Image 1 (cartoon, helix red, strand yellow):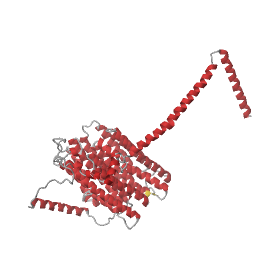
Image 2 (cartoon, one colour):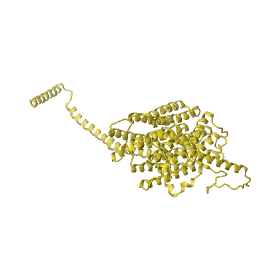
Image 3 (tube, rainbow, N blue to C red):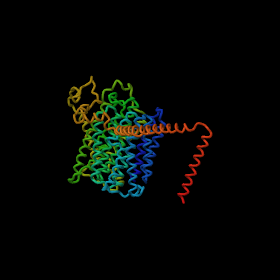
Image 4 (cartoon, one colour):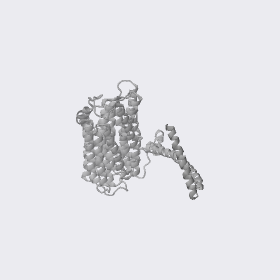
Length: 564
């Protein structure tokens, strides 16, 4: 199966599950018909981009997706839609410019049997960077992520599950895979640049996720953070890293879609997603609770779930083979990626406690029950995918799909057997449960340990976990800059546009106004002179006509002499 067809089928499976969920979630929404129309159009255009066999078709469908992104978000928030149009539009412009250059260099528009270009010249390196940046912005790298976070605040969970969490990631990472696999032979310096972007995306986005108080905003930052792992694997220059980045993209769309749908379940029943206003939902919404647990462990890279299987492959791709400056950078990026997974788990411990285990908030709905079965079904299916693709990663994904798509055998450094490890984990859990249930150990009660935080009333507020992180001196500046919009690219672009508008207004518009006024005054003076000689007397008008006629005859005769 080709990589294009595989992506297309996967997009329709994920999109179908979200649309199935939306049948109930969007049932009472006034704009439900608009949502479904845009959703199906988005799936068709995404399929066109995946299956395109030439650059022109790819650009046509890619540009259509930008318009549809604006339309789907604009239904709920024009401001957020405008920001998404600006930020993703920058990426699309870079992509178009790079592809036009690529077509000029290769003198071909075909994507089939494309001969990769070496990035050993400045021009080829520039073309590579333009296309790679366009793909990464589409996927949502840090720095070009603000629209995703704002969309999480203003759009329903179904839209978030459909676009930033799944299709946009699929499209951006698909193109990045093609860039490294089919379009270019990338040198080590450019590998380090792209891997650096991936590593900092992992770390900076997860630091932002750690302090969020809203379920959907926390997920939005993790949607950005996980892109870093994909970029790291793809840019590692190894077969297992490329396969890991591709596999992690598929896994990400599964568990992140599951998480956004679970957030939608809470939004549907409780009516809010602010963590401080939730709590005690583990028994009231058991399917949502279990689905959130599984997806949270998956995104955190905990074995034996699918997130660990793909992260393990990415880590393998970052392990240096021999001593070199590239290997030194890879070790640094590997450490950043692994630390990012630790922080990911920490932030989801906060989310799970605040939403499901904390004391029920007085502001939450008094009688909360599980969502209808049609909304539970996609969550159940996606949760099963998280488990099955983790336990049987090699049998169901690596050997039958990834190796044929890449055309190379995937070899591991060291040994990891997901099925055996899964059995051992289950056995360990069973033994632990048996010891807990049947032991006669005397238990003692102690006061609540709140990690040094101030306890407000009788509640341990999960939403306020890790507030002390914001007070750390190295991170204090980072959080302050982020809260002030220092990482908002749209803000800088808007500022540049306003500055250019200022220059145009005072340098062009005002200057033209002065020139126009001067010409008007000159015309008034000249017309006043002509007015004095046109007094309405017939004999004077006849004299002017004769003078003009004589001048014309003179000019005519002069022209004849010149021609002879």
